[in-house]
Length: 403
Image (cartoon, rainbow, N blue to C red; front, side, top):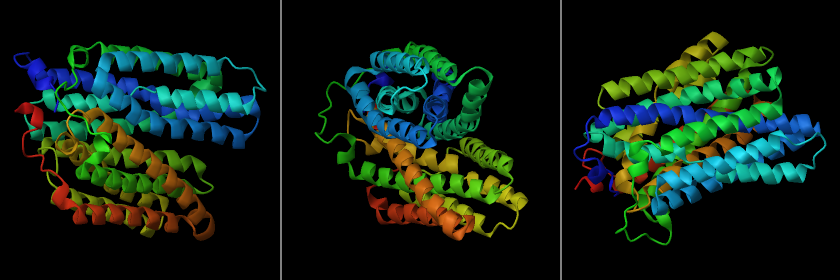
């Protein structure tokens, strides 16, 4: 699919290169997890309106969903280094500008700048996932790496928002955004200048379809699956917060247990060969994911809720690992980075839908109804996978580029 295998034949310690890139990418993505809440916090400070702040954060999220596949497509055509450096530089500059805006700035200015940040946010995660198979010895090792990566990303989402809010409280909301932009630029630049990223070359011989990666039935199936999983995630986040109720401080440790479960599951999957390697295996893992999150509705106390979240979360990283490992075979030639970006967009859009729907359900029927929505979204992912299993590739076979 791409020339990574050719670029790195004979190069020593490919696995160590993968580990190094994974660590760098996690550091680079940590600032990205601070931006949504950071923009919300800063916009509220500047406007005095939570409604305006929510709109600013929403504009960023929508633009991020649009910009990811667009930048991913540019990477597939132009290579990683230039796209990552330019997009990270633009995002850092925009965040510094937003951070320097005065109180009373028009909301329209904030909306435009926040949307521009979303469009410019560098697709570091998609670039890493496109590189990993070429840096590892076989498909099982790639699935294991995807499992570890998915688990590690959970930790960034646990740590990122508190960091943004803490910096905003201790320093200023504008300084927190500017600092996040600087960290994003530095870490992304280190990633882009790594030999593996710098040497990655697009597949010049690939005949790219006009519709990009979504012309593939397998990719459309994976997008639907991750969209459903996104609904599950968004619903659970809202439902856990609603279940905590007056004990508002309990929501954070509960969600941390959820992330810890994913970390445990990802570690186990990596040790056991990387998890499922077929459509049938993915359906089975999704069934476990759905059942575990549906069981949250029956938790009778916060202690029980935490225990079930830990167990249910164990299916998250292995599920992502299976989906990511399929992309090398599922995406049309020359579109692999764009394909990974579409998966991130699908999960993000699904999470927004799930959060909105779960909020309405929690208000009218309590958190149990929101947890039931999460279980139903997981069941929908299972159904899609079972109905479309024939178009999904097996990741036991070698990626196309290895030939």
